[in-house]
Length: 262
Image 1: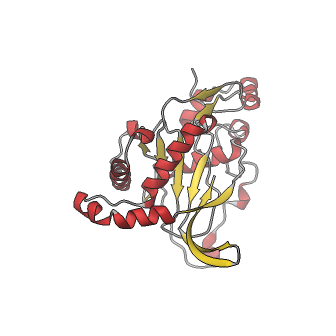
Image 2 (image 1 turned 90 degrees about the horizontal axis):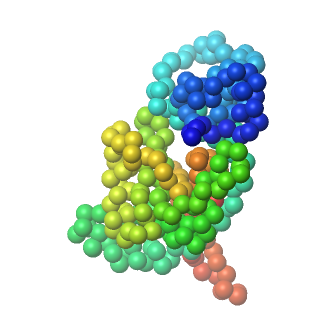
Image 3 (image 1 turned 90 degrees about the vertical axis):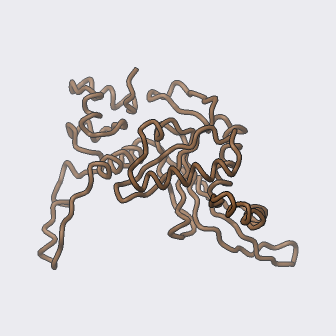
């Protein structure tokens, strides 16, 4: 069975042009193929194949510049994200969650966390909460076939954790999150993120996620639109916890809330 992700119209165009999608995907270094890839004969999605003048600019005419090559890994990651954004219709639902109970529990557990040598971050709680939600709403724990005729519902809950590295975006996966406790989840997230930064993640540690979490809490912001990581059907974006005024009748109170972008 083909691992290439492409809509029926793109597959039909490829057959018409005599283009093998498996070969094209391999040449482009990704699994998602868009119409532009087939029409351009292999030009990566998002490139201005019809008019390169928008991209091929001599920037030195405006002032001093330097150039540095992008890594092959970063190029492949960018191509995959570009294809996903072109192929998957996306709607982002913005909300926020009261995390007073989580922050109180983290404070209470700090001595034990130090004793265990584990950093109990909010991300561990969020991954566990997402795993529980995926069990309650199994349609989100699925993958849609490329022709849109079959939904594969997964009997496991694996959570991908997007990690921004010097080599490009990597998504290591924590397995069976619904069956693990917070300490183990936190330890595995920390281990995977550290090894991703050092480019020591194995290929078998990066595939098969039920859904991915993209956490931008480290850089701030109040929300964003994360790109769905195919063949997943959704992605959860998280930004930095903020203090929000919540009204109980006429009485205001400050409440820590974490922004969620689904």
